[in-house]
Amino acid sequence: MRRNGFRRWAAVLFAIFATALLAGCGADAAAPAAPLTPAPPPATPPVAAPTWVNLPSIGARSSLVPLGLNADRTVQVPPVDQPLQAGWYQYSPPPGQAGPAVILGHIDGNRQKGIFWRLHEMKTGDQVQVGQANGGTLTFTVTKVDQVAKKEFPTDAVYGNTADPELRLITCGGAFDAADRNYLDNIIVYAKLVT
Figure 1 (spheres, helix red, strand yellow):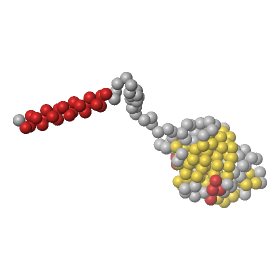
Figure 2 (cartoon, rainbow, N blue to C red):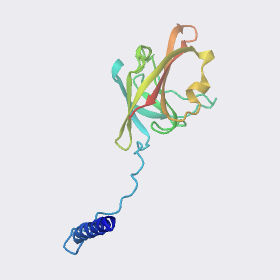
Figure 3 (cartoon, rainbow, N blue to C red):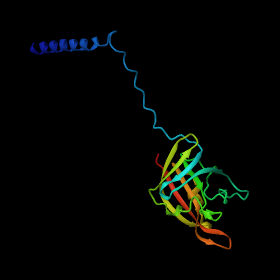
Figure 4 (cartoon, one colour):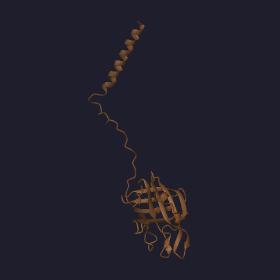
């Protein structure tokens, strides 16, 4: 008998509590919030053609000109008579898109230092900024700096597909062959997108 009384009392308290809660949902109550929806996926940087490159650690900044292929299927380079001009290889992905975006510049030319004169001085952890045609700026972090003989150029490592947005900066370097008027090596900087 005592148990039934307790159950009845608990049921009455529950009914009073439930009525008090529901009273707040009448016509005078504020409208309920919109139903929750899943959060949108994290924003990815918009992809646009690159317009400039900045390498603060070596004091190099340049606009970018589009580069294609020469008749012999080698990659074009910026004009040698404008050694401070860098270029983006337009058959590589634009910076910010999955894959290796490739930017080339001269070590020297026209009897003056080129835009990538000091590229060999870059170190792991250095930043590279790339401006986009849409006004955005992407930041890459250097992961590796390599000097390789031109005859052993690592084509797959430079131009091969990557799952994430990456960047390659390329110039000449090493010993200068006066007879051929050419450097024997390439300096290659590898970098990954951070923002």
